[in-house]
Image (cartoon, rainbow, N blue to C red; front, side, top):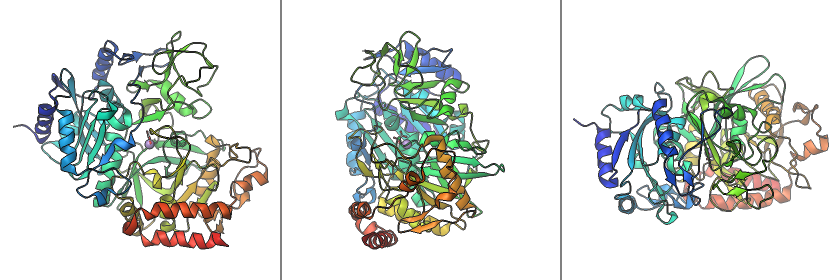
Length: 589
Ligand code: OXD
Ligand code: MN
């Protein structure tokens, strides 16, 4: 008798009509075969995979996507709850029946002549009580190889499922890649993601943003946990004690750099657990426990170097576990090495740009696409935490909310309590980057860095955060951070990168009750003497500038936050509005 999984796959095959169906076993041999086949398969701008210089970049391959398919397309991403209200103003919505009819029409025959890959995978360690078993089908070998890097792909997921019917379903086809026939749709009540017309990671690796954030946030709401857009890291202090923290930052704010930071502060080191997604559950001890459901990084290449992220450079060149993919970076045709803006060393004289066209230094366009990416196994990380595969996860002592703000937001602020911490997260804003299609450089409100990823009404989500706090007997402390404040000349004041450990040290000192803090209208900030910065060339006035609270700027901020909160109407928790009002009164003086 066919299992529930087999039945579902057969049903999808009847719609998509592939030439053949391949059930992936998740072995390295299988990935290598797919890479081999892809090297001989020509597309618009070359083969699906190009083998890179294996001496310098072991197991690395280049993939060029369709030029119109290079980022998440939020305007084509829908969350289809039965009621528009539950999807909230933060999501595009379509009535689920209508959405399914549209997708069925677009998907009928979409895999004709192609192979349908069936990917059974786990998000989370198979032995974890928090892990979920999932099935994705796809007609892209690039997606199949990427999913093997990003998830625990293979038979163990099928074994977990046996004949259960509650698995997370993902239907993916690149379709005809036309942006006019591209949709990424979520059906939270069916545990279903249906994505057609895009091969881009965030749109196509359905275990990532689609399941582990949008669908999982809804599961978390109903089951009493949180799915968050967060790094997870352990920080070891000079006494050898490790404190685990999580941090939410909008796309391309240096989250990956933070997760594997090389500390510029002696005696401290980072243990990496994850750079993008955290599932947070309340453990039997009443603490918050985090797991990273993924097993890889899908990181932004430009700007990654031995200066900004030496551990990522080591990870990318390690080649121990699974092949590594580069997407839409430039290629040095002489050395057959990948290249991107910001990489160490001189700019090569000749390159092929991300579309495979000849490129020379001084060209107007970038050689690598600004959102070019690497997909690499987390097991290659030299700083990987020994706790990474611990099925129960790690206990979290602090949560940080960060954003890219040139002005206003202090380097670090501690919340007065959990509710105020939720307010700090809810009012987050950040200057936009290239990770999502759209305008770059404007401030957009991005609560908990979840605006594009929360699978239900954000107002209801804030209430869920408040409720979680009530259920925790030892809630983590909550902080906001901003590494990006600039001076009058537009230069960053804070050195950032490994120096961010100086801020993390203060956070840990606060968690351990080792230092006092100064109360301001926007939260608790450090006494400057408690920040270890004496070996930095940072005059005290500059340091003070990082904490300057300009009332006139805050008034504008309060107004913007109010406008943002207003959209959530009756769902907006009273407690958060009270904090906004208290802040308004304070900055009016
Ligand atoms: C990502 C994103 O790709 O947040 O991680 O956009
Ligand atoms: Mn992300």
